[in-house]
Amino acid sequence: MTLGQKIKKIRKNMGLSQEVLGEILCVSRQTITKWETDTGIPDINNLQEISKLFGFPIDYFLND
Image 1 (cartoon, one colour):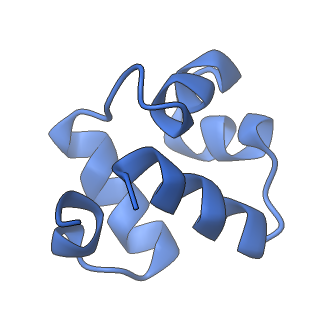
Image 2 (tube, helix red, strand yellow):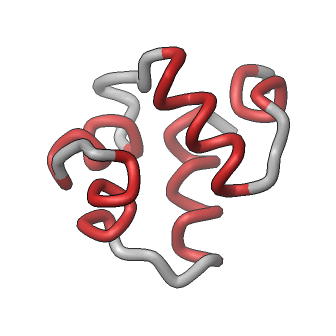
């Protein structure tokens, strides 16, 4: 599973829209779309925030 697939799956399981997740992370909905489609990746600060918010270690997102 790719980084984007993991973000999308957890986001949906938490009942968050791309827009709401973007607001929480102070990024646009389009940025979330890029991450989830693997056309972009979160920077380290956003990855740390995603890890905290979702309750998974950063390693989970970075390893296949």
